[in-house]
Length: 143
Length: 196
Image (tube, rainbow over all chains, first blue to last red; front, side, top):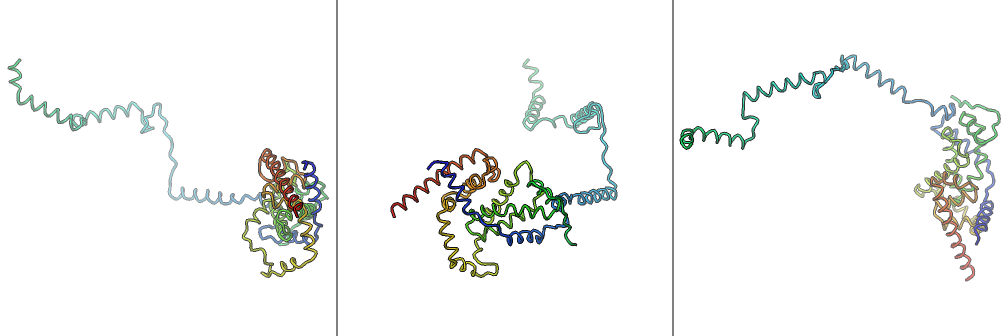
C-alpha cells in the first residue's frame, strides 16, 4: 500500500466517524464551567490569576520583622574599615595584631621554654643536660 | 454575588475569542466550545473508544481550557493548544481506576441498554471496518495521537510535536513507524480474510 493511499484512507475514515453537534452537551459544558467550584465568573480568569496573593503575606512578614527589631533593640552592625585589616579581627591593623601575637609568644617561651617542643625532643634535651651535669670534668680532662 | 458577564463586539478569530473569553465574555467562550465540540469529540471518541467517556473528557477539557485561558500563548494555533489539553485529559482519564462502567447512580442499566441496542450493534460493526479502530488496536497511545493529529486534524508536524510534547524529529520517526505497523496489520487482516 502506498503512503498516499494510507493517508487518504485515514482521512476518509476519520471523516466517516465525525459525530453530529450535540447542543445538549454544549449546554452541559457551559453549565459545568459556571458551576465549577474554583471558577468565579465575577472576575475573569486573567484578572483572577493576576492577583498577587503573596503581597499581603510579604507585607505582614516585613511588619513583624520591624516590630521584632524595635522591641529587642537590636541595632545593625556597622562595618569598620581599616587600611590593612587582619583576617581574624577586621577592625584591627595587621601590624598591631602581629605585634600582639609576637609579644604573647615571647611571654609563653619565657614562662615555659620547652613547651613548644614535643615529648621526645624534651626527653633528649633533658638527657643531654643530665650528662653534662654528671661528666663535666671528665670531658674536660680527656681534651 | 451574581456573576458579572461582559459582552464584547463579535470577535472573528480564535485568538480574538480567547482574549475576549479571558476578559470574562461568556459568549466568546461559548463560541469556542461550539467550534471545537465536533473535532474534539471525534478525536476523543476514537482515542477512548466509548462515546460517554469522550463526552466526559470533552467536558473536562473545556473546563481546563476556561481555567487556563490567560495562559494561552497566541504564537501557537488555538487548535494545537486545545488538542494538547484534550490529549492530557484523555491520558489522565485512562489512568484513573476503571470504575466507570457503572452509571451516575451506580447502576449498570445504561451498559445493558447499549448492549441490546440494534443501532449500537450496527455502529460497532461499522467501527470494525474503520481504519482508526485498527489503529487504536495496533498502535501505542502516542503513535495513535500522532497519526490522528497529522492525518485527521491535518496539523503540521511541528504542531503535532507541540501537542504530544516531543521533538519534530521524533514525531517524524513515530509517524513512519506507525504507518509501517498499520500496513503490516492491514496485510495480516487481508491475509486472514483471504483464508476464511
